[in-house]
Structure formats: structure tokens, C-alpha cells
Amino acid sequence: MTRWLIAVMIYLVALGANAATLVGGPTRGLWWNPAESGRGFNIEMQDDIMIVTSFVYAPNGSATWFISAGRYDFATNTFNATFDANTGGQCIGCAYVRPQGIANAAGPVRIVFDSYVTATLYYQGGSTRITKQLYAYDSVLSILRGSFVLTFNTSGLVIGDWLVMRTYESGSSGPFVAGYFDGFPTSRIAVALYDASTRRYAFLVRVGGYYDFYIVDMDDQRVFGLGWTYPVGGSPSGNGSAALGTRVQSPKEVNAEYARALLQDAGDADGDALRAAAYAHSKREGPGDAQAAALARQLEAALGATR
Image (cartoon, rainbow, N blue to C red; front, top):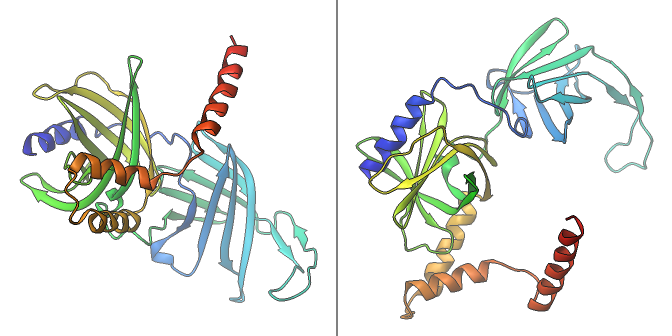
């Protein structure tokens, strides 16, 4: 375990100066300035169209909201629009009334994102720092817990890991999270940590005689960064390959499923492999064999038509 953590720390330090690249755009959801509680901003995006809803106050202190819609510039990590308003709409419990829109009701808005979860919002006459509001994760390590799918492509070989990261642990290199392959809760095969100096996360997974190694930026749902694979006893080399990933289950979901699996397996003498396979199969639902085969034939025909 110590060897794994040392390898992770060496590469975190080496990549510390690299600037974040916001592949996929900033994190969607609720944003705020923690020092200015009572107002906030909901940021959503589809393709390059961003919509920002601002929940703020009028000069007289009454609550109000604005909606801003425009294009997000992936090259500059920047959003530009205006604070638009609506009035005369439907109240809760009332019959529908079409609201009247007020374009540019409070001037221009500009948001410059410097990471997936931090930005500066500029408004007429000033600015404020905003960050993605994390209300379910109480530490940088807690965000590493849950079920993750991670993948990267190295020289045409696609590497993929389905991981469940569950337990907090600590070693000579500091605190980390440990986990296992999805469906095999009796194995302890993966570790992950956060490095404050580089503001990056790292995962290390042992797969037989090899390690899969990831150094990533991460928000509460998505993972972007670099991946390596190298033999046990060796070292990662090169610049790494682009790695992507996502959180599939939250920590609470993982803990609930793990507890159910332990209860179901109590007294079962069929062995770890059979129990783990049954556990993994029970979690997944899909079409029947005939439906799956028919869909496969349909896609095969489509693929052949493109050649």
C-alpha cells in the first residue's frame, strides 16, 4: 500500500503546475459565495448553451430572480449574457398566467470559470467569487466515496475500471479512501487520495500484474484527467492518456447495497466468486436475450451501412 501511495504522490507533484482544462464545461447545479449566503445562482448547460438563474434581492430587500441565457465559450471558459426578468406570472395554486419578459433588466452578466467548481461572476458595477455548492460532501476525501466508472485509451487498448470506493483509511503518506471492483466487495484492490497542493485527485487500481493509475480533476459527478497502466514493480512513464469517468452511485447508495449484500451472503458457502457474481447480476436490469440480440443485429446493420 505504501508503494502505491508514493507513486501517486510523485506524479501529483510532477503535474502540479498544469492548468485545469474544463473538458465538458463547468459543474452544473447550485453555486454561491459562502461569505455571502442568502443569494445564489443555478447554472445549467446543454451543449454550449448555458442558462444561469440568479436568486437575489431588489434594492428594497424583496426577493427576486433573473434568468440569463447565452453561449458558453469552451476556449475561454467564459459565459456572457444579460440579467433578464419576468413579471406578472403564475403564483403557486393560481391559474396559469403568461408572464411578461423584461430583457436586460439588470445589465450584463459575465462569468469566468477558473476550475470546474470555482469562478468569478461580473455584474454591473462589481464582481463576486462563486463556487459550486457542495452540501452533501463534508470533505475533499468524502467526495471520493461512491461508485465510479473510469476509462482511458492507451495505444488503442481501452482500459476501464468499475470501482466502489467505500472506506476511509490512513497510512504513512496520509489519509486515503480504499475500495474494490464493483460486484466483488470482498476484494480490496483500489485506493484514492486528494493532494491539496495540486488540487487533484488520484486513483490506483491493481489488476492482476498491472496497475491502472489516474490523476484527475473531479466535481461531484464527473472525472477528467490522465491515465497510465504499468506492471507491478515498474513505474508509470510518458505523459499519460486522456482519462474520463463518472460517479454512478453516491456514498449512501454504495453503503446500502454493501450492507444488503452482506446480509444476503450470510451463511452462504458457495464461495466469494459465486456470491460476488450473483450480487453484481442482481444489481443490473436490462432487456431479455431475444431483445438484446435483435438490437445487436439492428446496430450491426447500421454499422455495415456506414462502411
